[in-house]
Image (tube, rainbow, N blue to C red; front, side, top):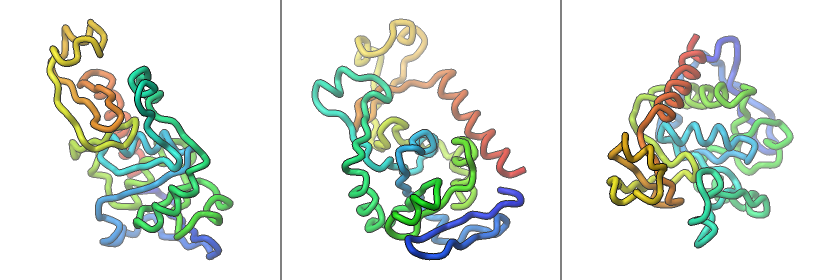
Length: 208
Protein backbone atom coordinates (compact mmCIF):
# COMPACT_ATOMS: atom_id res chain seq x y z
CA UNK A 1 0.00 0.00 0.00
CA UNK A 2 1.26 3.43 -1.00
CA UNK A 3 4.80 2.18 -1.73
CA UNK A 4 7.68 4.53 -1.07
CA UNK A 5 5.34 7.14 0.31
CA UNK A 6 4.09 8.31 3.67
CA UNK A 7 0.78 9.65 4.87
CA UNK A 8 1.20 13.19 6.10
CA UNK A 9 -0.94 14.96 8.65
CA UNK A 10 -0.48 18.62 9.44
CA UNK A 11 -2.19 20.52 12.20
CA UNK A 12 -2.77 24.25 12.17
CA UNK A 13 0.39 25.89 13.43
CA UNK A 14 2.03 22.52 14.05
CA UNK A 15 4.87 20.74 12.34
CA UNK A 16 3.92 18.12 9.78
CA UNK A 17 4.13 14.52 10.93
CA UNK A 18 4.40 11.42 8.78
CA UNK A 19 3.09 7.88 9.09
CA UNK A 20 5.15 5.32 7.14
CA UNK A 21 3.05 3.77 4.38
CA UNK A 22 3.60 0.21 5.63
CA UNK A 23 2.29 0.90 9.14
CA UNK A 24 -1.22 -0.44 9.83
CA UNK A 25 -3.73 2.29 10.67
CA UNK A 26 -4.47 2.53 14.43
CA UNK A 27 -7.73 1.12 15.80
CA UNK A 28 -9.38 4.55 15.97
CA UNK A 29 -8.70 5.11 12.29
CA UNK A 30 -10.47 1.87 11.36
CA UNK A 31 -13.77 3.07 12.79
CA UNK A 32 -16.44 4.35 10.33
CA UNK A 33 -14.79 7.25 8.55
CA UNK A 34 -16.40 10.68 8.31
CA UNK A 35 -14.53 13.32 6.30
CA UNK A 36 -15.05 16.90 5.18
CA UNK A 37 -13.14 17.99 2.08
CA UNK A 38 -12.70 21.30 0.30
CA UNK A 39 -14.59 21.90 -2.94
CA UNK A 40 -11.57 21.03 -5.07
CA UNK A 41 -11.93 17.45 -3.79
CA UNK A 42 -15.62 17.07 -4.62
CA UNK A 43 -14.83 14.27 -7.08
CA UNK A 44 -13.03 12.36 -4.33
CA UNK A 45 -15.97 12.88 -1.99
CA UNK A 46 -18.35 11.40 -4.55
CA UNK A 47 -16.17 8.31 -4.88
CA UNK A 48 -16.01 7.86 -1.11
CA UNK A 49 -19.79 8.18 -0.88
CA UNK A 50 -20.24 5.35 -3.36
CA UNK A 51 -18.51 2.95 -0.96
CA UNK A 52 -20.45 4.13 2.08
CA UNK A 53 -18.05 6.71 3.52
CA UNK A 54 -19.62 9.83 5.04
CA UNK A 55 -17.91 12.44 2.85
CA UNK A 56 -19.08 16.05 3.06
CA UNK A 57 -17.88 18.92 0.89
CA UNK A 58 -17.38 22.17 2.79
CA UNK A 59 -19.95 24.70 1.63
CA UNK A 60 -22.05 22.18 -0.26
CA UNK A 61 -25.82 22.49 0.13
CA UNK A 62 -28.83 20.83 -1.48
CA UNK A 63 -31.15 23.05 -3.46
CA UNK A 64 -34.72 23.45 -2.23
CA UNK A 65 -38.22 23.72 -3.65
CA UNK A 66 -38.59 24.33 -7.37
CA UNK A 67 -34.84 24.75 -7.78
CA UNK A 68 -34.41 21.15 -6.61
CA UNK A 69 -37.32 19.71 -8.58
CA UNK A 70 -36.11 21.31 -11.82
CA UNK A 71 -32.51 20.08 -11.39
CA UNK A 72 -30.93 16.77 -12.28
CA UNK A 73 -27.80 15.01 -11.10
CA UNK A 74 -25.02 17.16 -9.68
CA UNK A 75 -27.06 20.28 -10.42
CA UNK A 76 -29.13 19.37 -7.35
CA UNK A 77 -26.36 20.68 -5.12
CA UNK A 78 -24.40 23.92 -5.02
CA UNK A 79 -21.29 25.09 -3.17
CA UNK A 80 -21.53 28.31 -1.17
CA UNK A 81 -18.04 29.37 -0.13
CA UNK A 82 -19.52 31.81 2.40
CA UNK A 83 -20.41 28.89 4.68
CA UNK A 84 -17.37 26.71 3.97
CA UNK A 85 -15.37 27.99 6.96
CA UNK A 86 -18.29 27.35 9.32
CA UNK A 87 -18.59 23.82 7.89
CA UNK A 88 -14.90 23.20 8.60
CA UNK A 89 -15.20 24.38 12.20
CA UNK A 90 -18.33 22.34 12.83
CA UNK A 91 -16.66 19.31 11.29
CA UNK A 92 -13.66 19.69 13.61
CA UNK A 93 -15.94 19.86 16.65
CA UNK A 94 -17.80 16.76 15.45
CA UNK A 95 -14.55 14.84 15.09
CA UNK A 96 -14.64 14.56 11.30
CA UNK A 97 -11.37 14.24 9.39
CA UNK A 98 -10.65 17.40 7.40
CA UNK A 99 -8.95 16.62 4.10
CA UNK A 100 -7.00 19.02 1.89
CA UNK A 101 -4.26 19.00 -0.74
CA UNK A 102 -2.01 21.93 0.16
CA UNK A 103 0.11 22.87 3.14
CA UNK A 104 -1.22 26.41 2.94
CA UNK A 105 -4.80 25.18 3.31
CA UNK A 106 -3.80 22.81 6.10
CA UNK A 107 -2.25 25.66 8.07
CA UNK A 108 -5.55 27.56 8.10
CA UNK A 109 -7.93 24.71 8.96
CA UNK A 110 -8.97 23.89 12.53
CA UNK A 111 -7.81 20.70 14.22
CA UNK A 112 -5.31 18.40 12.48
CA UNK A 113 -6.22 18.15 8.79
CA UNK A 114 -5.11 15.23 6.65
CA UNK A 115 -2.84 16.38 3.82
CA UNK A 116 -3.25 14.20 0.72
CA UNK A 117 -0.14 13.17 -1.17
CA UNK A 118 -1.76 11.72 -4.29
CA UNK A 119 -2.52 14.07 -7.17
CA UNK A 120 -5.50 12.62 -9.06
CA UNK A 121 -8.96 11.71 -7.75
CA UNK A 122 -8.66 7.92 -8.12
CA UNK A 123 -5.31 7.83 -6.32
CA UNK A 124 -6.56 10.19 -3.60
CA UNK A 125 -9.58 7.93 -3.08
CA UNK A 126 -7.32 4.88 -2.76
CA UNK A 127 -4.93 6.75 -0.43
CA UNK A 128 -7.70 7.63 2.03
CA UNK A 129 -9.07 4.08 2.12
CA UNK A 130 -5.56 2.72 2.59
CA UNK A 131 -4.49 5.11 5.35
CA UNK A 132 -7.71 4.64 7.30
CA UNK A 133 -7.83 0.86 6.85
CA UNK A 134 -10.94 0.83 4.67
CA UNK A 135 -9.87 -0.88 1.45
CA UNK A 136 -12.59 -3.49 1.98
CA UNK A 137 -15.23 -0.76 1.68
CA UNK A 138 -15.30 -1.10 -2.12
CA UNK A 139 -16.91 -4.54 -1.72
CA UNK A 140 -19.08 -3.78 1.31
CA UNK A 141 -22.22 -3.10 -0.71
CA UNK A 142 -22.81 0.09 1.31
CA UNK A 143 -23.48 3.36 -0.48
CA UNK A 144 -24.47 6.92 0.27
CA UNK A 145 -25.83 9.30 -2.33
CA UNK A 146 -22.93 10.28 -4.58
CA UNK A 147 -24.55 13.64 -5.24
CA UNK A 148 -25.42 14.94 -1.77
CA UNK A 149 -24.01 12.41 0.75
CA UNK A 150 -27.51 11.42 1.89
CA UNK A 151 -27.90 8.02 3.51
CA UNK A 152 -31.69 7.49 3.52
CA UNK A 153 -32.98 5.49 0.54
CA UNK A 154 -36.48 4.71 -0.70
CA UNK A 155 -37.00 1.79 -3.07
CA UNK A 156 -39.41 2.55 -5.92
CA UNK A 157 -41.11 0.54 -8.64
CA UNK A 158 -41.63 1.31 -12.32
CA UNK A 159 -45.05 2.85 -11.81
CA UNK A 160 -43.64 5.35 -9.31
CA UNK A 161 -40.83 6.63 -11.55
CA UNK A 162 -42.58 6.50 -14.92
CA UNK A 163 -42.32 10.26 -15.46
CA UNK A 164 -38.91 10.65 -13.82
CA UNK A 165 -36.57 8.37 -15.77
CA UNK A 166 -35.87 7.86 -19.50
CA UNK A 167 -38.42 5.58 -21.23
CA UNK A 168 -35.68 3.22 -22.36
CA UNK A 169 -34.65 2.60 -18.76
CA UNK A 170 -38.19 1.54 -17.80
CA UNK A 171 -38.05 -1.29 -20.34
CA UNK A 172 -34.95 -2.87 -18.82
CA UNK A 173 -35.02 -1.92 -15.11
CA UNK A 174 -37.67 -2.62 -12.49
CA UNK A 175 -35.85 -1.54 -9.33
CA UNK A 176 -35.11 2.09 -8.50
CA UNK A 177 -33.76 3.94 -5.47
CA UNK A 178 -34.44 7.54 -4.51
CA UNK A 179 -32.22 9.57 -2.21
CA UNK A 180 -34.23 10.91 0.70
CA UNK A 181 -32.21 14.12 0.77
CA UNK A 182 -31.71 15.40 -2.80
CA UNK A 183 -34.45 13.19 -4.32
CA UNK A 184 -32.23 11.96 -7.16
CA UNK A 185 -33.26 8.57 -8.57
CA UNK A 186 -30.72 5.83 -9.23
CA UNK A 187 -30.93 2.38 -10.77
CA UNK A 188 -28.52 -0.53 -11.31
CA UNK A 189 -26.87 -0.73 -14.69
CA UNK A 190 -23.69 -0.59 -16.72
CA UNK A 191 -22.74 2.90 -15.54
CA UNK A 192 -22.80 1.88 -11.87
CA UNK A 193 -20.94 -1.37 -12.58
CA UNK A 194 -18.27 0.49 -14.56
CA UNK A 195 -17.84 3.09 -11.81
CA UNK A 196 -17.39 0.44 -9.12
CA UNK A 197 -14.90 -1.46 -11.29
CA UNK A 198 -12.90 1.76 -11.63
CA UNK A 199 -12.87 2.26 -7.85
CA UNK A 200 -11.76 -1.34 -7.26
CA UNK A 201 -8.98 -0.89 -9.80
CA UNK A 202 -7.82 2.29 -8.06
CA UNK A 203 -7.61 0.49 -4.72
CA UNK A 204 -5.83 -2.50 -6.28
CA UNK A 205 -3.26 -0.21 -7.90
CA UNK A 206 -2.59 1.40 -4.52
CA UNK A 207 -1.77 -2.04 -3.08
CA UNK A 208 0.91 -2.78 -5.68
